[in-house]
Length: 175
Image 1: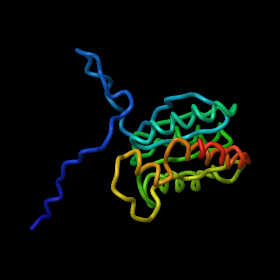
Image 2 (image 1 turned 90 degrees about the vertical axis):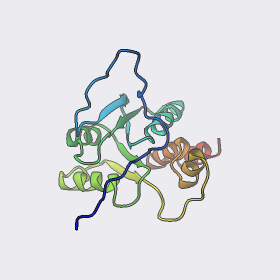
Image 3 (image 1 turned 60 degrees about the vertical axis):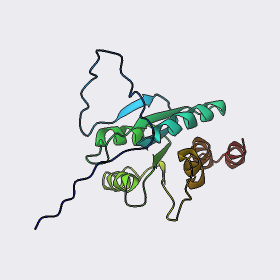
């Protein structure tokens, strides 16, 4: 017999831009297309899922240090938006991918795309940020994100470290 693999998924938290005014049915979402939610010039932060909010806050923290950051919302893991990833990789010194997933998830797909397209052969510094491969204690979503090292401070600190600003990266974690 066949396997009944249907399930309901109840995501935690709210997405960015999810509240629509009355009588507005929204714009159809194009499958496989991400979007830039904040324009910057030096670094790019590509978020997948509700973590995009933390990515935007990280960009705001980086602005205090004079670092201009683009933030993009991948929206899809499969199919990847190759054009968006290529653009982020070619136009920035640093690319960070951030997800509330594990090894083998979204960041792994991005890594594969970057490698196959020669985008890691130049000066781009790329780092994935994802859940650590260990148990995360029960708690609020905010507490779990903090424990996992995926908070806006952790994202900003990772960027600063890649830019050689280790002193500032330690400072930002302790804010």
